[in-house]
Image (cartoon, rainbow, N blue to C red; front, side, top):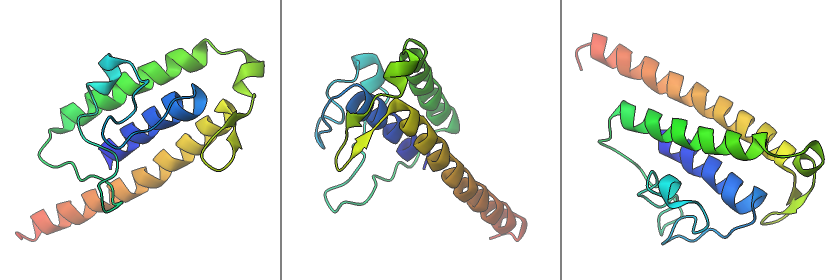
Length: 130
């Protein structure tokens, strides 16, 4: 889920807000190379399921999330209020950076709950000796 959160934030920033294209092979071509370096896996596999990322340390995920959030905040911080509220074309609709920020907040909140549930289940399993 942590990789999923990171890629979605990059996708919304560099595709929907800044107007690039998403490509399954190249991930997000218009995102800077220093950001793309943190996204070694595609978001979606050929069967349209999210790419599972296993075996990475938590620190690797946290660094990825931190670098991406810093880039996101840099773009948002330099945006005027008018630009922040200006609609941009998205896949099926028009969205503003203001809406994207609200959407990403909700997206992360939902996944935070799922991560908590997974943690509680893993701790219970460890305590039971399984």
